[in-house]
Length: 416
Image (cartoon, rainbow, N blue to C red):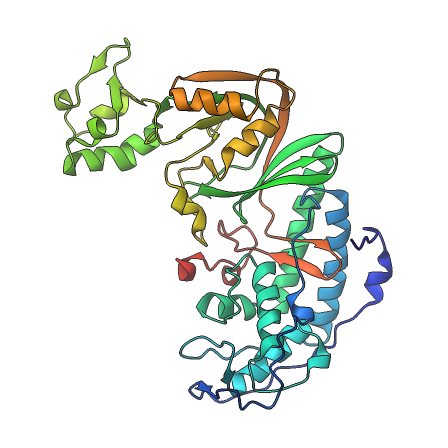
């Protein structure tokens, strides 16, 4: 494995050869079979390099590499940035010959996704596909090697805006990394990337896809410690969900609560029948809604608790298909965790009596089981939408909560 010093400032001397993209006419894309000028080479070009890293987003090394990225992008801006890639009807993809591909190559040259040695051509060949895949991976997009609507949108964010985004996120990084300096292990939830990192000894040991809060029900930024895991949890429904979701549902589907094993209780702990509630009013908001443990429980197998004033938590979900979505901003503020049982075991590694077999046995029993974590694990919910974890690998994500100052950086709507 190739190792590089995070503090090697020689990178600041590097520059990328920038040039304005060619202005091209908006012609219809034409598939040319195999009669293109450039050889169709199945080897992976420089643009196909891996961009994943086991370096934590919250680390001094990431701060240093992000500073290097700012120097590189400052140089790109000083040389005029990059030109627009003209949008076409239908995606640009392997086998297409079109003038827009020339502009695409130039755009990918400037950002370092495509090596200049592969030449200039109107043909979308394997080198361009590899470069597009690298670009998509760096931007948290589906890595399909095709330039469709969302990839066009990301390509055509200006270099000035990306540089400003890096500056804003470096400020955030510096603040939160200082908090993790003495933590031997911690969990990070990065909201814009909807991703979780379990970090131990300055290395990412687990990554989990997440679902985070909607734009109108945002996941808060916070620091806490995970002190409890509940297997087969009861779900007490937040009042915001009762008001915004369940009351309207009950007006349309009177059996919704019964079908989903949700019971109502008054302030004396007495169960209330759904039929006795006037669902055309807000009367139900004064009741407690509690869902029994089980497969259809909103938290499924697990609830991960940590003290916070926002009443949010991390949890499993029966809706596993949500983790396949590009835009995973669908919760009411809490965090849904893919493969949560792996994270459970990592959190409980110093809590006696818990291994995979014992955990699975309890989950199978459907018995509500709270587990106190022997050594509470630090937890950080952060908003980092631009960073770098390696020389030349600069990561960007959709500014879903509009914190980076430019509407062009938030394009979640087009991706839905």
